[in-house]
Amino acid sequence: MTDLETLVEEFALNVEAQTKAIWRGDAKTGNKHADRYLAAFKALCAHGNAGRDSLAVLFKHSNMDVSTTAAAFLLRYRTSEAKAVLEEAAKGEGFVAFASAQTLKNWEEGTWALDPVEPVEPPVKRARPRTRGNKGSPGRGGGHRRGKSGE
Image (cartoon, rainbow, N blue to C red; front, top):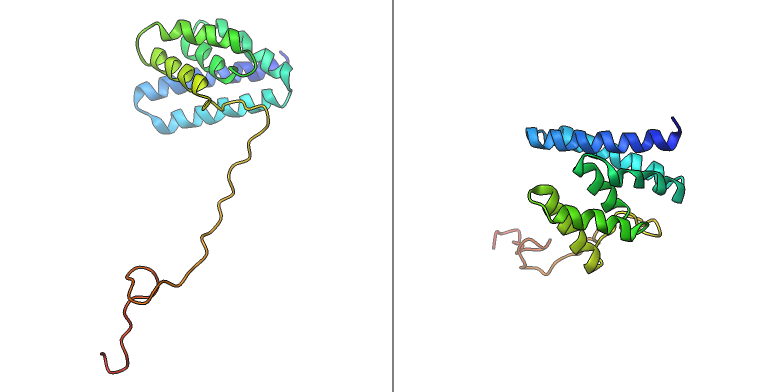
């Protein structure tokens, strides 16, 4: 099995495992599996379009969670094929249908960003500068100050 095939299998197994964990009510385990399939996706993307092409085989996976998750991740790269998978799933009922419809909605609105063309850097969190508030402004560093005599 090639490195790409191993990563695709890792992606699929962890999508399935996350779904099972969520249905059991085990969010902690579900999140671990999500981290693993996200890592597999990033590793596939490190191989460029060959990695993305490898993931596209999951469009025909027997588990609808796997096929729609792969489609959601490949919307930018394999748009027509991915949309077809999601549109078909959205016709059904249940959570996968809802998630597929939401993914398509986000795509149409331009808010989808699972595989952007350029890597998106997380925003830099900057500390707010400390400012001295106005005297007499409670909660802003000043407040009413009493003199020595307690006035």
